[in-house]
Figure 1 (cartoon, rainbow, N blue to C red):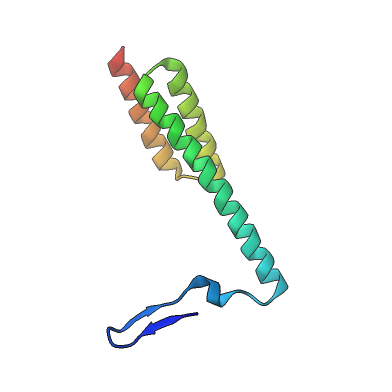
Figure 2: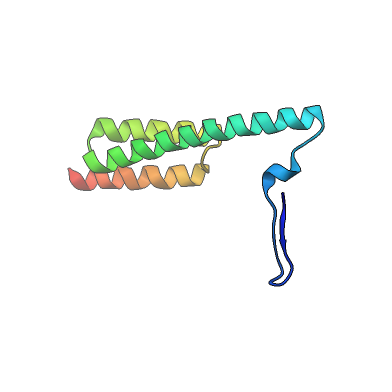
Length: 98
């Protein structure tokens, strides 16, 4: 049920109130929910790989993080320039650790 507060001129509407009635719209909503969950999990695994590479700064962990970043950029989970920036910073960190 939507909440309207006219005295302070704010409009707070619950998203469950506007559920689709059309069959294809319901399907798109299910698909979006599934994709969101999958993307969230994959982005989390990329972040974990990068954090592990920053903590360990070993060649294997950095290689795994770079592979995860490339995969994420290819799938559109993060922007390709963001992936390139993170890879460059990981490589600089690895080079400085040697």
